[in-house]
Amino acid sequence: VISQAPEVSTGTGIETAEAVTTGQSVTTVVTDVTEVVDAVMPSVVSINNTFIAQQDYFGQTLESEQTGSGSGIIVGENDSELLIATNYHVIEDADELSVQFIDGKEVQAQVKGSDAGMDLAVIAVQLADLEESTKNEIVVATLGDSDNLKVGEPAIAIGNALGYGQS
Image 1 (cartoon, rainbow, N blue to C red):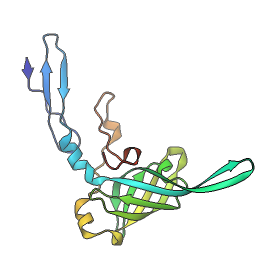
Image 2: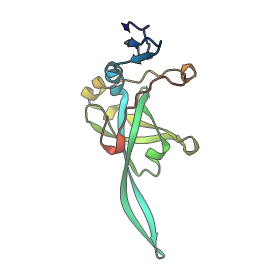
Image 3: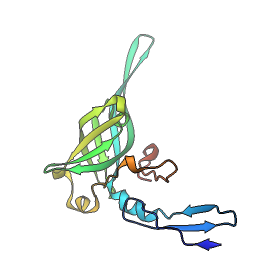
Image 4: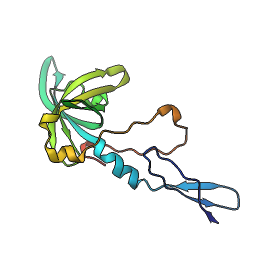
C-alpha cells in the first residue's frame, strides 16, 4: 500500500516526501534531495591551502611546499568582504589560501579568526576581488537551529572531498 506521507520540511522551504506503508505499520520516507542541493551548492566553496612542511631526517630539517584542501560555507557578507566558515585543520599553517566558488573562479583569502580546539575557522575574501559573474552565482547560506534537530533525521554532505572539487 502506498500512501501520501505528511509534508517533510528540510529547513530550506523545499518540501517533498513519499511514504511506503506495509501491512506491519512500518513507514519509510524517501526524499529527493536534489532541490536542497541546488539551493545550497552556491554557498559551498572549495578551499586550497599552500604551506611549508618541515620534516626532520637524521638531524637535518627539510622543507617542502605542500597543499591541502577542504570545504567551506559562505556564512556572511559585509561592505568589503565575504565571510566563510571552515575547519581549522583546513587552514592550519597556511602561507596562502585560495577559495574556489561554484562557477570555478578562484580568489585569495585571509584568515579572520580560528579556534584549533573547536576545529573552526573563519576566512574572508575581498568582494573587490570577485568578478560580477561570480557574485551573481553565489549566495550566503541560510543557517538553521541545531537545537531543533533530532537523532535520525537525514543529513546531506556537500563539500570538497579529497580536493576533487564540489560534490
